[in-house]
Image (tube, rainbow, N blue to C red; front, side):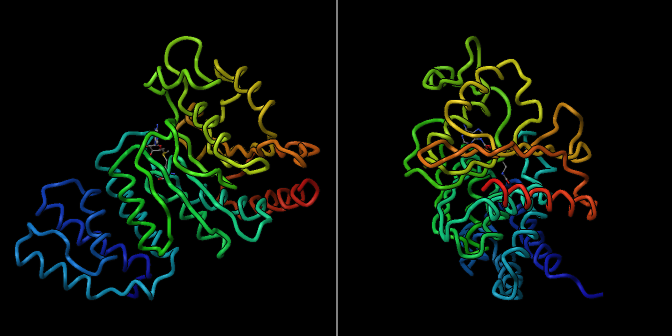
Amino acid sequence: MKVSPVEELFTIFNETAVLLQEELSCTYLEALAETGENIFQQSVLQEELSELTRKRLKKSYESVSLTKFSSEEIRKSFQLAILKGMKENVQAHHQMTPDSIGLLIGYLVAKFMKQSSFRILDPAVGTGNLLTTVLNQQGNKVMDAIGIDIDDLLIKLSYVNANLQEHAVEFFNQDSLSNLFIDPVDVIVSDLPVGFYPDDIRALDYQLKAEEGHSNAHHLFIEQSVKYVKNGGYLFFLVPSNLFESEQAGKLHEYLKEQANIQALLQLPLSLFKNEQSAKSILVLQKKGEQVHAPKEVLLAMLPSLSNAVQMEKILSKIDLWIRENK
Ligand code: SAM
């Protein structure tokens, strides 16, 4: 039976990661990052391996030539391997952004961004799945991409993921809510970490800090992102659907009224999530600035199940029409 390119490449990632996992006594995800780096460097970089494992790895690596795969095929096969590793051990809010959501955000970025070249940032880049899904849909319009994450394993996966897909992304392994050493960008995309931010002292620097107790990380991320996007720049966030109903929502509303224009709020279908509490929406903002006008009306939609092609087609036409009339 003929295997698809994604299956073929997944098998290489998977089999070599398992070999390395056993020999290095590490987690599958750590081994995946190692094997990804080996494949990219076309060499076995780990010195502590037995001769037999080294030989088996070399043989697998020699059987694959990345040049025959598209970036999307590489991303999807690496994504499958990450999913396998995440089943082993990963905290819920470190989950990778699913394909369907990344594709939709990438579609929106392509529609909103009229410039011929732009700079993009994901301040919670995780495995890089969302960022590279978006990059793969922008042709060669992205001149600079930046990813930041606090988790050193995830950012390593992200870096390997970007290298394998031949995306030149600059990565920073740090708390995105501390100072960022970057110039403001044109676009931000991010699947925001939801939950409390543990550093109450740093949270004091934010307008959106909680009056009492820990602040909401995703609120602080919104404020930080608005700070690091240019005037008139766009922000595409995956946020909890109850964002504007939570306890701190009043403050968030006030802040957004001052700083940005809400462009769109697209509710994702419940079927994508475990329960109503964990449901997410895509929030699109534009930072205020000279020559920046609020849209005539905010684009509000409840998205159908993303596998429902007919309904999805209708919604995409509605989005296209809104963009023609408002952008
Ligand atoms: N879009 C990512 C992907 O496709 O893999 C998934 C993002 S995940 C929902 C949220 C990410 O935020 C996690 O990778 C987590 O490590 C990161 N994170 C949480 N708090 C952070 C902080 N203070 N600074 C930077 N990254 C943070």
